[in-house]
Amino acid sequence: MNFNEKDLKQIRDRKSELSTIEAQLENFRTGFPFIKAVRPATISDGILRLDEEKLEKYQTLFHKKAKNLLKFVPASGAASRMFKSLYSAKDEGKVDASVQQFEENLQKFAFYNSLSAFIKEDTLKGKLNALLTPQGLDYGNLPKGLLEFHSYPEKARTAIEEHLVEGALYANHKGRVKLHFTVSPEHKKKFKTLIDQVKEEYERKYEVKYSISFSEQKSSTDTIAVDAKNEPFRDDKGNLLFRPAGHGALLENLNDLKADIIFIKNIDNVVPDHLKNETVKYKKALAGILLDYQKTIFSFIKRLEKTEVSAYMIQKANRFLRQQLNVEPPKGFRNWSIEEKKAFAIEKLRRPLRVCGMVKNVGEPGGGPFWVSNTDGSVSLQVVESAQFNLQNKRQKSIFEQATHFNPVDLICSFKTPENTYYHLADFRDDQTGFITEKSQNGKTLKAQELPGLWNGAMANWNTIFVEVPLITFNPVKTVNDLLRKEHQPL
Image (cartoon, rainbow, N blue to C red; front, side, top):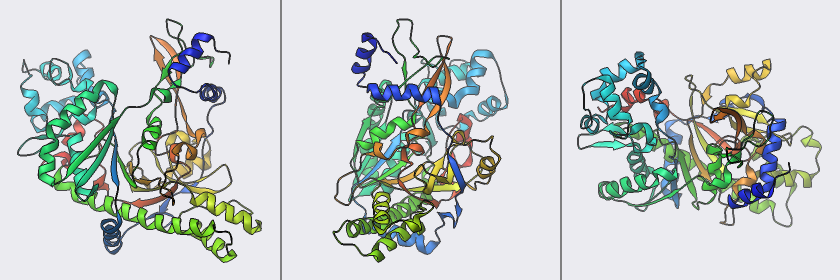
């Protein structure tokens, strides 16, 4: 692709790499390959199930060994999609069952008291204007984190406040709680204002001190858009068009953080206090599992990288990879030399580590746990989205439909090395797991590209442990009426 001088200046000013943009253009031309799923991960075949004894064991390990904790919350997502049916009612007069449910149960929403002050006329349109427009609560233009989700006797809590509480309950080391929120630039000030208002209240209540930081999705991670002919899409002024590249772009934000254990959870997956116990218990247990596995991994690395290593130790390390870290070697591995087997073990052990909670599949759209064939011929555990499957292939479709569990974005991560440095996360991303979507700009059709998803392809080459967690720990708010479910209502 021949870019002109104006294009090259625009690329430099964005701090983007020309080689990266050229690779993105090539992706548009060739497309992304589908993954090659081998089988779904299930209980006893890729997914651990914890009994009460193991739950207790790993929680105890967490309490003894955990330090330098951080809670990472992607919080830039707009709430507008929560109110899709309400917008149709407000702007087009389309009143469906979900709109009726909303109006009939209005007083049950945690935001009702705040909303009532803005209702000018007691009609559906008056209520919707009060909820969605800048003349009212403006919820249609805010991120989910700033919406009041749950009612308590003393006040209503926003989603971000529930994460402050969660942080105090499981990301707390000696009274210090570190949280990091990724936010959009236009809402950063509102997030800071809210936290400044409530932080001391929660510090007193939970006897902690918060350290709260924010970051924005970096513009340098935006991907170039193209037209129907896969040529760079240009705006009315002839400038190249770049678009945000999905949550996979947050890999750089995550890479900038330095902590031994990082809890990752979506902004809208929170519950009131009376239901938090299971979440806290499993968060600690999963972190305990991570610490347990990490200790063994570091021990193997140190032994394997000595000058002289026995064949027995190399065999033992590869058995650990297969049986505990779910990394099956390529075909023909038995015929490899001992040095090749040693190199394979070191390569696979020297990777970031994640422990992912998995809930039973209840038909939610999104990723699930699968055994996947990698480009080097090995097979490992991956979180895979439906779009990554070739569902026209009967075998792949069958594997997809056999999935028993679902990924609720419940991750405990560590990218610390045995030397107490940190891995560079982009080195472990599978760049062939991006997405191409169709969008429009000023009435013109364009194609956009998303980077490999943060917990999908962006972590494809991490060591991965899947653990079943209770369904009660997964309570996302996709539509406003989800807040009427008993899991989001007070006792």
